[in-house]
Length: 216
Image (cartoon, rainbow, N blue to C red; front, side):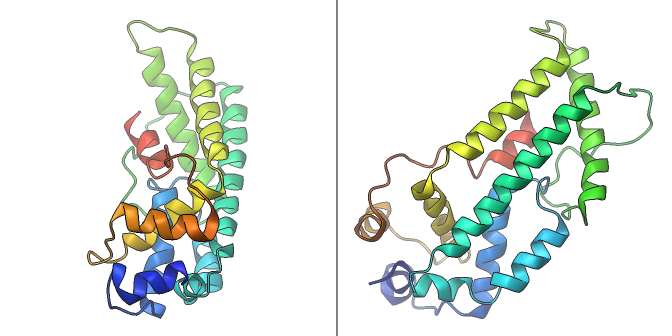
């Protein structure tokens, strides 16, 4: 029995994994990865929706996990690209006299429409992080180095998620689509192990990546 069939036939709910659920499934997965809407752009979201929005739940029913890996791979690329741009910003002088505002809590904000808008958003964000470090009463190291280490740690955390952990997050997204989608951890764990091998480690940091950026 596939993971999707297991969900559909009783462990989660009697509700079919239809197109509506599929669209919400994809959106929930993207939100889990990019909680603060900092890495994907609206262009990314639109392209993923066109490719998987109506079929992702059906793919699960068929035992196809390709969408989980492809979306995560795109997320990893976006994080890597952004961390590289952050490091470039940190090598440049920052204007702290700007009157621009910075939106720190972005979970209810739209994704930036494209890379140019994302770049602008991040310039303000990094300037704010540097300013906060400069204002610290007890700095432990120069602000650019501290911020660089912060984003190196983020990228490392993203790369440390192996395929088992990626799929666990993927299934967590499906579990979050409907309040009725709840299953005992033991049942899900046993079924998933049967199909894809043991989950060697619990998912460590992934859903909170956006929260971490928002709260620190």
